[in-house]
Image (cartoon, rainbow, N blue to C red):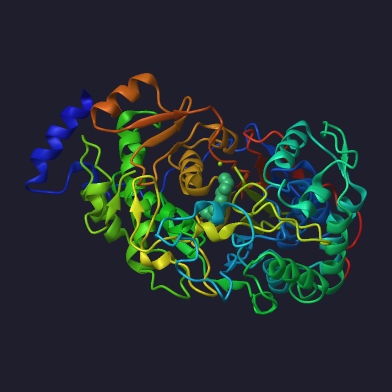
Length: 596
Ligand code: DON
C-alpha cells in the first residue's frame, strides 16, 4: 500500500517537477561506503586467484600465477584448460570476450567473437516460404561461425602476457592426453549428449564416447588424444596452426563434404580485435565493460544509470519498490539492446547516447512508480508478432592486482555438436545469435531489427557481460556469467549486491536472481528472489511473474578485491557443482624469460 501513496504523491508532483525519486540524483552522496568484511565466505588469496567452473582449470590457472605469470597468462592457460575439462562451453572452436584491467589502471578488451562465413546471407536460416528454420541454427553444418578463441588468446597474450605462450597451452594439452576423472555431473551430461547432440556425428561419438560403448560413470577417466594433438600444435606454432595447416584443412574438408559454409579463406582471415572498453559509473564505482558486438556492457550500464537516477538503492533488495524499478530499468535497456546493437564494424551503434546519464534520466522519468509498463507499447515502432548455462565465465586476479574477466562460449551446450574429424575440438553454433529474419520481432523473443542481421564477415550480437569494477582507482570486483540473454541481469544482480546492498561477494553471488529481457514481457525469478508478499504487490502493479527453480540463473564466478590489504577473495558460483576458487601457491621458481 505504501507504494500507492508514493505513486499518488509522485503523480501529483509530476505536473510541476520530475518524480521525487528521480529528482534525487544531484542530492545523492557521490559514493556509498565501502563494503566491510567483503571477503566473508570467500577464498582469500594474496598471490592471485582463479575462479572458474572447473576445479582442474582453476588449478592450472593458479599454477600459472604461481610460476610468475600475470592475470592474462593465467586467463589464457585457464581458457585452454576449460576447452578440455568443461567441453560444453570451454572451447577453442567458439569465441568470446576478455576484459582486462591492469593494476596501473590501464584497461582494454579483446573481442574474439565468431564471425559469419563470407558466404553467409541474411536469409540463410529461412525456408522457401520465409519461416525461420531454427533447426539449422541449433546444430549441424551451417550453425558454426568462424571460431575466434585461439586468435583471441594469442592477441591478449601478445599484448599483455609475460610467460612463454607454449607454457600456457601445454598444461591443457597434457591434461587432454593424460585424461582427467569425470565428475558425476559431467559423466551424466556426456551420457545425455551421446544420445542426442553427438549422435548424428561419428567424430563426436568417437571423441566423447566410452571405448566399450557403455555409459560414463563418475570417476572414469576421459582422455582426448586428438584434442591433445591439436593443443600441442597450437602450443608449438600459435594461432597459425589452428587457422591454417592440418587443423584448418580438416575443418574445411568436413564443411565441404557436408554442405557447411566455412572455407579456408574464412579461417585464414579471422582476426580478434582489441577494442576500448565501455565505461560507466554506479554509486561511485567505475565500471569497465565489454562493448558491441556484445550487448552486455550497454545493458549493464544503461540499467545501473537508471537505477542511480531513481536512487533505487534507498529501498531494500527484496521490496516491491526496488524490484519494480529494477525490472522497469532492465526492460528499457533490453529494448535498446534489440533496437540498436550489432557488430560495430557493420552497424552504427549510438553508444554515447545509450550510455549517457541524460538518456538514463529520460528513461527513468518514463517509469511509472506504481505501474508496470507494457514492453510492446514501449516499442510502437517495431512490428511485433505474438507468439540454458552453456557458456562459461571465469575471473582472474594476480598478485599485483591485474585482473581479467573472460566469458566465452560455443553458444548452446557443446555448440553444434560437431567434433572436427581428427582434431578433437567442438565447433560452435553461434550463427543462431544473429537476427534470422528482417522485421520479425516476436513476443517470444525473436528480434528482427537491422543492426544484427546476418552479413558476410559480421560478428553476431552477444549478451556476454564480462565486467570489472574499480573504485578510487583500485580494483574492486571481477564478474560475469553464462546464461544467454539472462547474462546482463545476472551480472547486474551481482554488481548491485556488492555495491548498492553492500554484500560480501559470497553473499552477492549466492543471492537469488531475477530476469526481464523486454520480450517476452515476463519477469523470471529464482526461488527466494521475490517473496510471496512482494509477488502480490508486483502483480497488482501489472507485472507478470514466473518462478524458476532455485539456483538456476547464471554461473557468476567472481572475485572481490580488497585494495587496502591487497587480498583477492574468490567466490565460485555454487550453482555449478564442479567450480572452484584456486588461490595461487607461493612462487616456486623464477619465471621463464621471454614470451616465446
Ligand atoms: O553470446 C551470447 O549471448 C550467447 N551465445 C551465449 C549463450 C549462452 O550463454 C548459453 N548458455 N547459457
